[in-house]
Length: 111
Image (cartoon, rainbow, N blue to C red; front, side, top):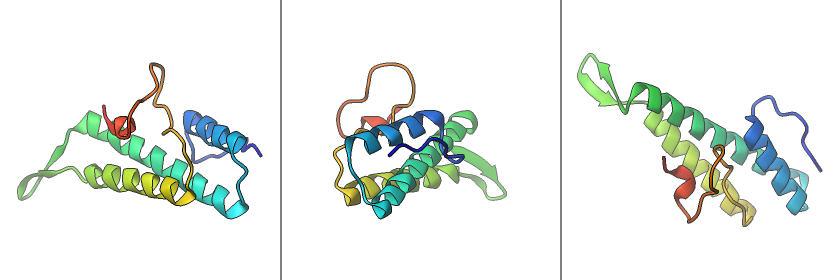
């Protein structure tokens, strides 16, 4: 099975999702969980990009405070990891762009 279009996924994440679907035969409910994992990955990357532009802290009436996207990044990364674990798939995280593939458990979440 191949997903041709997913308006909510970035092209590289959609490519990753289809690669997993080529390697594994999944039940319909598992495909939905995998899609949720892909969406969580994209949300994590969106939060990371916003943090890169705006910094880790923001100005508030009470002074400097952690940027709200820190929680979005953390929660999305945890959701991705939990869904992949729940699916019991041995897969790599989606690649972030050109370059060497990530190595090790944590490398997909480092800058």
